Image (cartoon, rainbow, N blue to C red; front, side):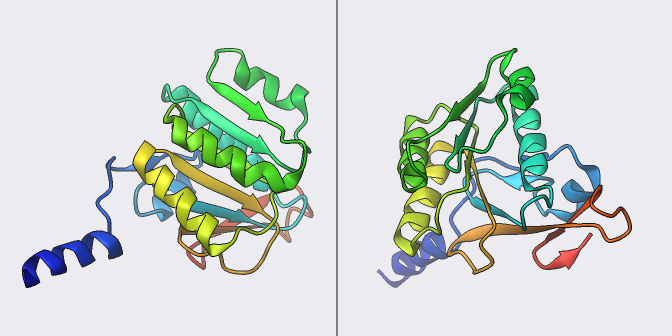
Length: 189
């Protein structure tokens, strides 16, 4: 009885990963810095930074990598800021869905539905209001069940419950707005 309880606690605290490795970002230095060689499947990853810092560029690199790996990508554009012209080339071979909810508050609901479908290897939620703990836990659970990489792109600086990886993206001082640098798990690359 006690051993069964211990095993259950281990599963809750450190659940098994359904897929070894992660989704490569296409950025070699970032992939080397991440323990899974990329964004982990079945977990929540945050990309945090100010406007113009390169968050969407990093999300696009992830989407490109997932499509090249033969996985479907769903991008929930809750803020309705994506330029269709910039993303159209990714949709040509198939595999990219861009969802624009009527308002940003519906972004988490759209993400929930997409993860429950089990059809997507990468689901990105961009521009939604801060998620509650309950919603973050639910989305992470759904990502684990569907073996999808779940990415939240936000400007919020507060900690989000349950993220496996948190990437802070900032403009590089040397490049004067042209370059971006990312820090995974609080350490600069």
